[in-house]
Image: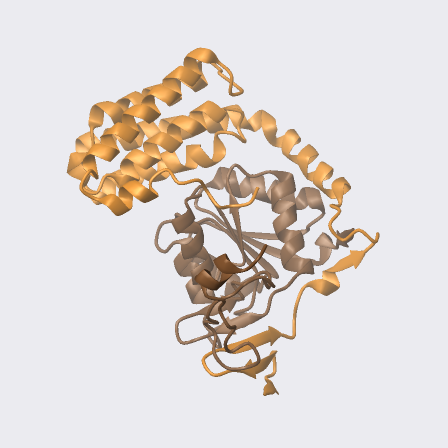
Length: 193
Length: 181
């Protein structure tokens, strides 16, 4: 049975309610052609152009993200390996993973992804291998310093692959007695593009 | 094709990284949006949500104070704020399956992985504007219907009880194997 609340229509079932909010955003869209799946490419191109206008800022932003990552690494030495200090490092690496490609440095993003995995999947901060963290931080800095853009620089690719292998080997050893972790690690993302 | 009237929509972008906020804002303005508000963590985001009553929330996951997941859970409290049904787009560097399911179960409407692109963000916004999903409330969940489609070929027990689709008879696997093809 359905009943109307002030802001939604609620249909009650045995163990759940289905609620249809009265306010939705459909009135903010106008159908202009019959094909409902077609995108408004003009709007997308305008947004791409706006992002392109912003792009001269990206090099400076990437350098500041590298500085942040290095400061986070130094904190591990001065502040010790704790949940708090490793979280600071994780956040700095995670931001480079998310932004690196937009800023024009997809290989830096790939190396940062490997560093995120290393920090996230190492259960005890004290077990983190500092030398491997240092290699990641130095590699990200080198990619930016050498202005390695795109994804096909052979040396940078080999470096990124090598760091990922070292990370995977370290983590698999750390979790060798955890079959659930081993089964789940490395499974492909289910996020649509 | 739908044309979204971005100039009438109000956005709230929550991300602790100022660069990412600027990128999202730039894309939204590029689509034609005028009202874009920003917050730099979950707590400020919740305050901004109450003050600005946005039509669409775009939030990061990993943030200090409380994160995007906790923020989503706070927004999805029926009766606790002005609009618990607001579409929430989670924009994050997390892409693992477990994370996506966790976000969905906290009440996130759409999930978008970084690196961001003008097309991918547009597609998520189009989806929340043109294809709003009903909300489901159970003892343990309140959020947009996690079933995006009805699978006509599904056989098996129906987990939601009551109503027309209480039980769908499952065809025993053995019978299925014996059936002529």
